[in-house]
Image (cartoon, rainbow, N blue to C red; front, side, top):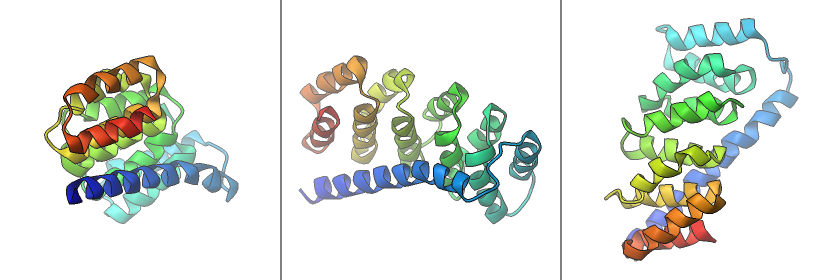
Length: 187
């Protein structure tokens, strides 16, 4: 029971963090310096690709939530495996209106573990990436309850018949800890 409560709280906190990061983009745009600029984007990408301090890279990620495009996705994708910068990289990846951001997050699922994997899964849910349903289906079987629960929550955010069917099928053989998250995803 304690594990289920901890899993629910952690999943809820991660979902809130993902929503807050996506909600920040319009605020950043309203705060000024809002005109997307290829020059500004190239400068920010240059910071990500350099040996700049991580604090500078985090700030560049924040600005790429406003100025980023498809061009920034490869540099951001490289940061998804960095324990200190992954959450910063996911902020612009959630905001960039290009399918390349979805693909980068999907591709990262195979190489990430633990909290980094949960973060990428949450970001796919925020983006409502219907093409990630198959990849998330596999994560529903993950032995880590937190990862499996994050996949269920992401599928719930994605919605649609494929995601719902996946959740219903997973509910049949799911553990008690994960079945709760699956039921919430179906709600």
